Length: 190
Image 1 (tube, rainbow, N blue to C red):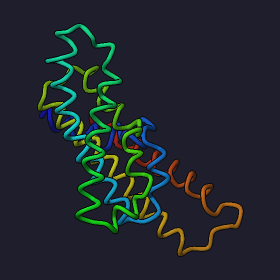
Image 2 (cartoon, rainbow, N blue to C red):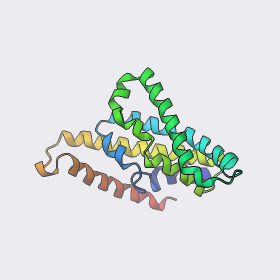
Image 3 (spheres, rainbow, N blue to C red):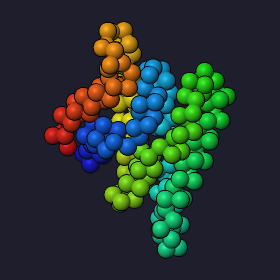
Image 4 (cartoon, one colour):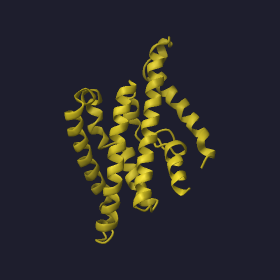
């Protein structure tokens, strides 16, 4: 039951984008098309999942024993940067079209505050290794879900008549706000 609460809480109740407002830059930047959003979501799931394991091991087997916990932010950023480089190389080989579609947003996963925020939250919540992995992957799935739903709404909005003053960024921000309020309805679940 504890893992179920972590999963539901991370995906719906405390959605990293819609409740904690982390990762807004890629959320707004990559959410133009559903396919691109799915690719970005998958990359974030991979990076957060692997980084949660590496971060946990580094925190409790290197930083804490050496009493250099103050270095965690720098160490976590280096781990995330290395993983993003790995994802970038893999995507360039496997799916050049997706690599091109993600463009500058793929390397920006390194500085995505959602990825770093989750790494720091894992330490603050004092989760064990399995809980850390479940929380990180669930949070990434929540990010991907929000990104994909938002992209679908934006694609649909392009087909409708929107007042000239609301086209583009204004309607995207209003839509994101409404989507965030919809996710707040899940707050009673956990």
